[in-house]
Length: 416
Image 1 (cartoon, rainbow, N blue to C red):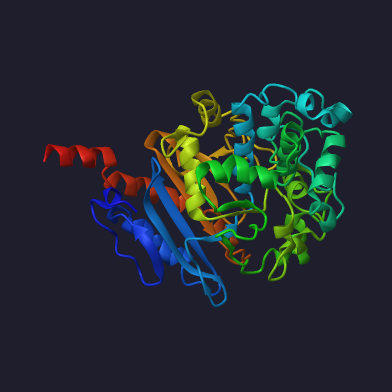
Image 2 (cartoon, rainbow, N blue to C red):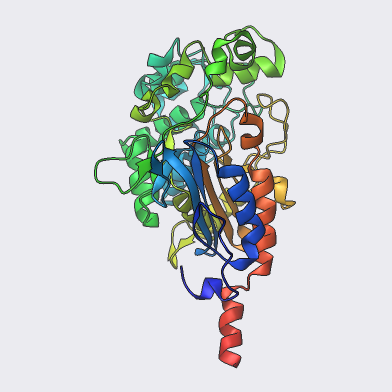
């Protein structure tokens, strides 16, 4: 990290925490050590950047029993993957290869079947395509792991009565945007993660599924119960074995689970790593996620243009304030593939949270970006882990206020 970033000094790191952090972030570092460290077999990492300059880059714990977490450790970030997949679409739109207000079927003709010919790219990216139900297209885990089959079945599927209404497409979102991107480019989403996101950002820590041979990114093993609770009656209620549940609870369960889907997370080498699930199996490091959201904040990376000003405005814009039907009528404030994260008190911030609480985030007005990843998926602590952004982001904003901006530091040095 540059000396400029830490002109105000470094925070003392608690035992077991590695990396560096500016002194103004000491409360954030302590909270990270408390809530992420000290978990047998588990660990995590947190990166905070301002205009691409790292202010915090820390990690702790174990990537697997006996293996310590490192800066190059990636975790499965579940739904935080959606923000990366959406970025692929924005890169294509930026080059004029697709238009947000054009029908998806204009680029992906098969998608025009069964009354979907008028569904636009914009509706697809804002969870309003009426295609959130997983049991409508899959009967088990083997189907879910066949990403091209899922793309084909969604192309042939009929939209449900939630067409046009915000209803979180928890798993189908990834196959929908992958089918669109494949139709435009002829390439799969895993390859597009590399060519449209990782390579232009000069990072190695963003992958869809298992990192390829030669990558510096290692994959943290999932720790905890891993949704084993779905085998119990209470888990069946909440995770979708009872597909007939009405209302928002039924919509939520149908969007996430069907019998046996939890098995893709089992074992030391889970099957979820061997597919292309653009809604859920991204493997990311904290620093790479922070770099991505830094580029989404102002459209640049290392002074080079990543997205045009026009596309950046589209990314920042809140598309709908309507309550999300699948997420228990929560006001997600959907952007084009991202959602607002108002825990800082700022509507300008946006990103995407994943199952278990990993997330990427940008606050364009302050030039801030954050990546947080960890590998614990424990039902006993799930509720607390899921809301990690609610304590991380306020501490990020507070810490940034305590660290002089690089421009101010340089000006003061010049005056001296």
